[in-house]
Amino acid sequence: MKITFVTDTYFPQANGVATTLVQLVKGLRDRGHEIDIIRPAVLACEEAGLKVASVGLPGYKDVRFGFPIKLVLQTRWYKKRPDVIYIATETPLGASAVSAARALGIPAASGFHTNFQQYVAHYQLPLLEKATLKYLRHVHNRSTCTFVPSRDVIVDLERRGFENLELLPKGVDTKLFSPKKRSQLLRGKWGVREGGVVGLYVGRIAAEKNLPVILRTFLEIRKRIPDFRGVFVGDGPKLEELRKEHPQFIYAGEKRGEELAEFYASADVFVFPSTTETFGNVTMEAMASGLAVVAYDYAAARQHIINGENGFSVPFDEEDSFIETAILAAQSDVSELRQKARASARKVRWKKVIKRFEKNLKNLVSENSGETADTRSPQPRTTSQGI
Image (cartoon, rainbow, N blue to C red; front, side, top):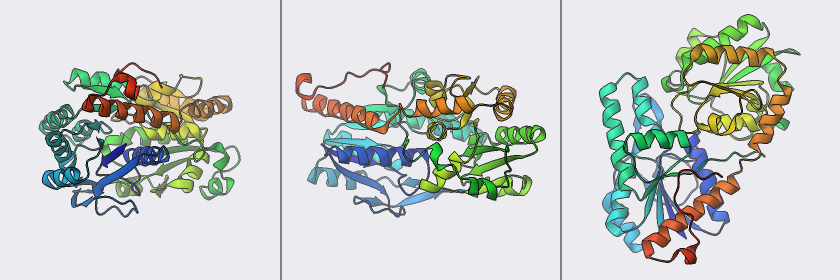
């Protein structure tokens, strides 16, 4: 197949959407498909494809919105028609891609990777939250179908009027993220002595990630375990504020690749109280690294954590329970739980996700061309299939 990806984020940016897209593109290419990528020109990656103008979100330099280029895309796709288009982001660039695909009769799937409407709510803009939700619903309902990474998000979106939703879970790179990457040298740099405990957070340092709960958690654990180190990995608009207000913690900035894997594996407990995830790739990366994960019971945690067995899941948005659970995880011998976390992550492989994605895209192509189900062996659309 000739598959076009349209996205406002891609490598080398460090976020869950970019990570997912890199895996999907690589996997599809390995399976013999021709991939074209349309993304902002400022992304310094070696990928061929169309590079478009974009603007950064004020105060959040890494979030970019590509400009709408419907006529450019129509001309490009008229000359070299893709079989199917995958639109990963719903910015004006993504919306114009949906319009161009509809004008040419090309099937265009979209991906719901980010709860932008919830992000807006964290910045106390309720009117903009409603407008954002309306815009997102409009973009996705004009696409052929929308891939969503978790069942609970599907339920929420259906309640809000989103249509043609399909489940596409995510995988994790268990070769990169592994307990074997644990570094005593790195722990020494953090000032951790024998028997000390490291609590880790990986992600954007931004309001929508529930930073106050992370801080409360680290502070409460520190009261009980003197040799505790709280480590933040990531960048974002709140980073400098955190550094000034809580200098007792370690702020490593943005990490990626082998260095990120070493940071994961060198910690003990992973705290992730975000309430705005569609999935949460970091949950699976931490489990693959053999950490005791503490997260709210939804998205990736609901799919993959059995509470008390391979991690800790806490009722959604119950802050006190989250903190108490994190303290328990830090104070207890959870070596067996951490081994089971790793074992669980090894069952969630990108190869399987990519095969499923490929089959769904073939299904869209065959439906669009009028081919029979027997020709393409399509997978019926459903929101209840496992992986």
